[in-house]
Image (cartoon, rainbow, N blue to C red; front, top):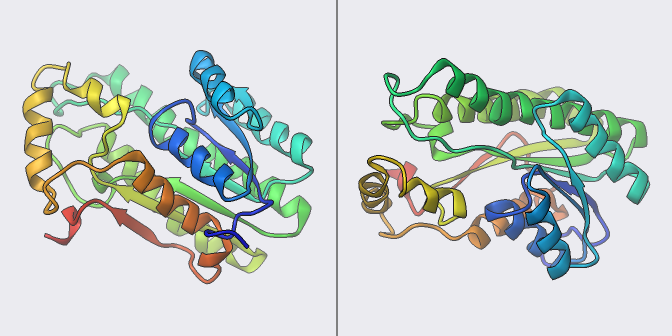
Length: 252
């Protein structure tokens, strides 16, 4: 068994072209897992495959039922089964309730909410068919546990992630399927760095850095390590947990 207990596991990671998803692929592969990486960013997936040729890729939009089902089916066809889903795909807009449009709301809830539900749904179907159980790790956020300003759409979408985790954990524990989530603080991903280019973004990030008791932003690899732990056999009696990876933000 590797460090995290994912050696030989068949894994699907969504939103894997960059940020936390890409870091998670690296950690899983290093621990001996077999990985299929998904994203809507075809170029990003191509560079990931250049870095890690053993990783398979599938382009698709998690908010599309057909695409979500197809990416799970692709994992089963590639590996013969699905042991682990890391439901990471999401978008991170910044805006107050007055700044957020109906279109913004619908887009964020479609990707971060419905997309997570769909990938979990089809992953559970695949795990039940194999009758060997499995592990799902959803990527929530500190915004899915506590309120924050200028998170009018993103925060509620991440509360969906946290709630879905708990309900699915109870629903499928008897079938050997564990469902957990990580709740990252502000992590230095490409998406977060892009927030600095939005109106008020630089000030927002400076405030968030100070809000973390450790006094810095997190790194994608730090979240990836927590995801790998929850995904693997080291966490065999853990389900329904929302694990903060936030430099102490939620402990204040």
